[in-house]
View 1 (cartoon, rainbow, N blue to C red):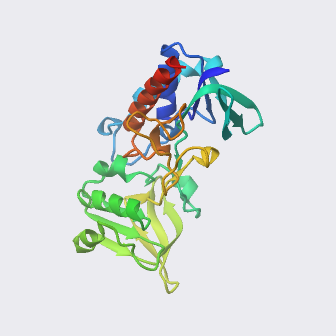
View 2 (cartoon, helix red, strand yellow; view 1 turned 180 degrees about the horizontal axis):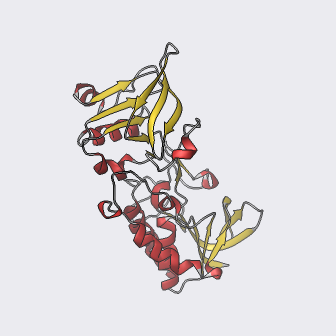
View 3 (cartoon, helix red, strand yellow; view 1 turned 45 degrees about the vertical axis):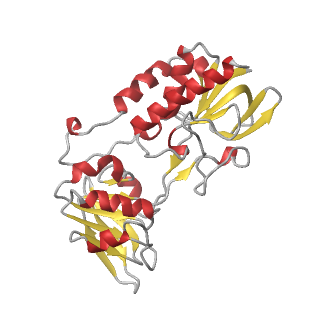
Length: 300
């Protein structure tokens, strides 16, 4: 039986695992990949690497420590976590069962995709899924945000503070009312298109056009220097559904010490209800989760 199993290999999971190794815990990371969302970086024709503040270097340091430690990682998705005597059972996609005294869930989120032609070709080449991370790069640029709810409107509002013009494309017949709706409608550099469907993403080296269809079926092209898909994130929490408390968005509810509603299960990063989906935030949360798990294990 392991002392600790960390589920997820993104910024939070990598940090949690390295901290656990340094605490001399018998730890195993279970994940389908190493790096998580840091494996994707937005490329733009006018941006140099030095202009971007990123947590990639921090994450790569932790990843390099784990890449040669075969005993500390198991490369496979997790399907289920259940309680057992003296701990928890972690069942992997292949049907294997791993037993542990404590668990840290750092499985992140899935981005909702457009599933239209051109999307795969231009992912992170002018087409991105996080305005929160990249908005400062779009000073005096023309930008498109795809989405309708709070996430899309927050992203539109942030981009509008620096961009020349922002167009928000919503598939809903009416723009959802949020705390930011009135401000966006009054803004001089924001255009909100309701009931429009994205048909295709076009570009050369980088995405620079969207083919959209209006409510009457008329097809047109919308030019942009950057496009952000800002639809609701889907937390990878299905394997603990019914075990730990989740919020209305299916994010794992944690306290300031990363404890969940179940003693012995901790969570960190984007899969939780912590504020801001940022790499450096996830790194800090992963460290906190291991420190809390360590204290829990000391008391057993």
